Image 1: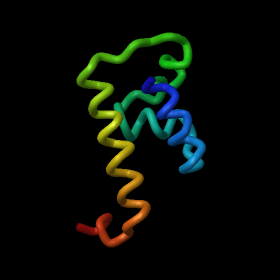
Image 2: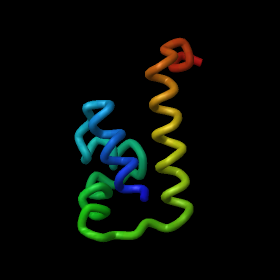
Image 3: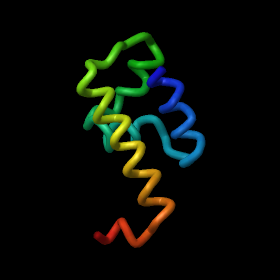
Length: 67
């Protein structure tokens, strides 16, 4: 479930939900809406998952950030 992955991501990266929403979807209310039952479109869910993968990867390998 996407919200569980996002909640884990937020904890792991000590990121506020509004910042996550802005960075991942340009919607600061995105996580709050998911918590309240919103179901994202498949394309949005895919973009969010890609964002989390890229962000986590860049944190593990700082050289990739400047590439």
